[in-house]
Length: 437
Ligand code: GLY
Image (cartoon, rainbow, N blue to C red; front, side, top):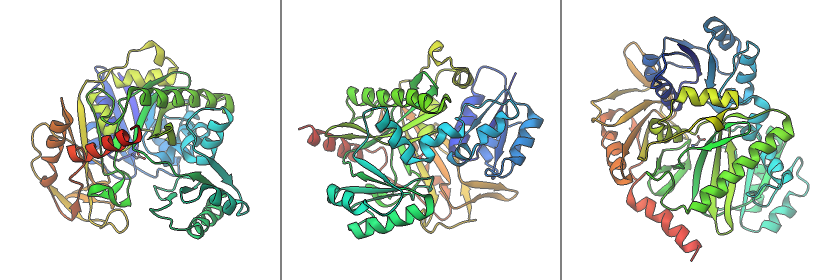
């Protein structure tokens, strides 16, 4: 029997819970989250609601459970040291310690690391601790610049020329704000091209990639509207994406492998967990947008349901540094994930509104996200509420399966209709075809 502690209560953690419970081993799951996720509740032996920022309750729960290992889903507790806190009780995690989780929590750390170890993938960039020099660098970049705040900012830490910034004055203002809040701002060259996520299991030395996924950050159809945590995502049956060439995945893998090695050289600590690279295909090759130190949400819902290998074994190999000794396989299936979110999301979402979930068509997977189960039903907390996933031999079929469930949710919600559709995917393919002539 294996006792596993799962930290977090979103859809990403719901699919992690489901995948752990699919193990052929006898798994007893213990969940710790800041709200009650009805899906995780059903799978767990015990579910404790508590703070994800102060680890006193988490440590007490873990000390009582004495799990064989833990896995932490969300970025904030990983960055704040939940893994370090659990290690005080000799509980190892398939999630990184905070010093190596800086890969996500400090964008300047990652840019500097990649530059120092001469890893390909960085755009032109400079890190600024004060205003001096920013304008000169912006002038060098011309109209194509991005300004990033150096810390976890819930998706609000990056502003891009043309989208959010319309002049060097705008860029200076955001950089000043970032310096005063986070101590640093990063100014980078703006890259153009389609993005993809390549998540890899990492044990500090070995890297095993999951199928590539494309997430959709914008709130509305046609990639319009404000940036969100991700409105939906897809992955293809060949584990690549329709607009990628085989060398793109190889380049991304190489960046992740080298970054993993560099992290150890730099910190003396092995990165054990998920290295999730946000990459972009550009005219000049694959570029690194950013790293996250956890599964992507929604991307976890594309890859984990098709993981054939026992996930418990994978987590143990991450912890023990033995990823090179197991064969990790995914089903050759396409997947499409579509999120249902509260009206007004992401800027002014309705909160505390009840939703009714009708009968979900057969074959659709449903994951609960930012909701709270109360005695009289399920209430939205203000962020992404429910995710539906279709799995099939082709993207077209998977899209239709996921879409068939969207109308089953009643309440003040909306969703994107276009994720995983032929029309939207064709736009990405055309973009890359144009780029390479
Ligand atoms: N898919 C976006 C994220 O997980 O941060």
